[in-house]
Length: 326
Image (cartoon, rainbow, N blue to C red; front, side, top):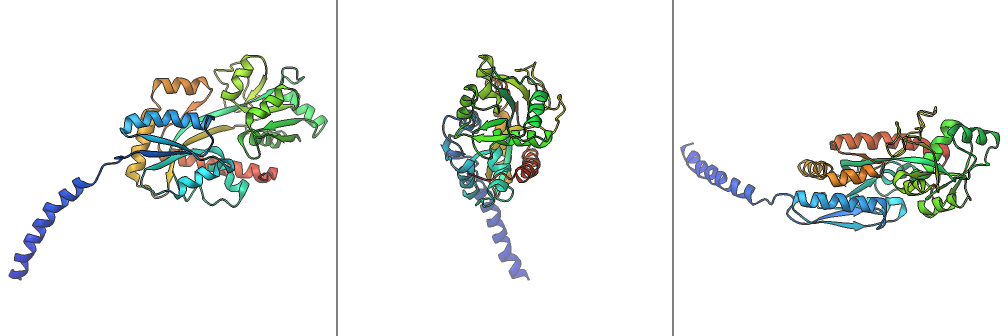
């Protein structure tokens, strides 16, 4: 027993000396550039916001954040790329409304699962849509549209930027809530759908606030109602759908930061703190508010809860409307 004790003591002493050296040799996160994946093309809303938030976070984290666009398949390609990346905090990205809460039901054969393959970091923003018509349209209220649709089922049309996006889903939710029938006219982009609306070729469109506002201000579009719970400061005279009797027509097109599943909690927490700090930037806040958006923030758990509730909501809408991908 005495011999064992004499041998064990030096081993313990050596381990004690080595342990702090090993710990101090571990590099702190982040110690190299971070890749930021955007599942949509350059120049769009998701891309612009990603670059803005990445720039602010880069300063806070003291490392470059490189934005990489991987568009295609309604956001699925870029989102799948994030899900398959190493869970080390050096690949993160923007998790958007459709690929995180709609596409699993819409496509049915995704090669990633938003719930099991990705980790929410933080919500960045939520933005309502506004129902708009051509200024020459006879419709000035939601009631007039509902009455016309009930009088002639299938006569009214609505444009969108493609199957399964927030443009179409907002209209489908409106149809289901009001018990009306209207015809969907999909385009290759939201701007193309809006252009055709202004040309008088379709009846209406649910469009993003930031996209519709310039044409509304120029009197090229007439706003009818907004999909947020309350009126927007940018359109104080335009009612919410809740005000006019359709409280279920609440749509907020959101996006937030995500990482691969298995990314250590300490890293997620550090990214969350950096993003929350970035969202306090006055310039960024003013830009987001000026586009009619609500500023995000909060914990990873907050964002996870939003994704879960939105997935359930839009799964039901997609199934009821029998929406199929293009």
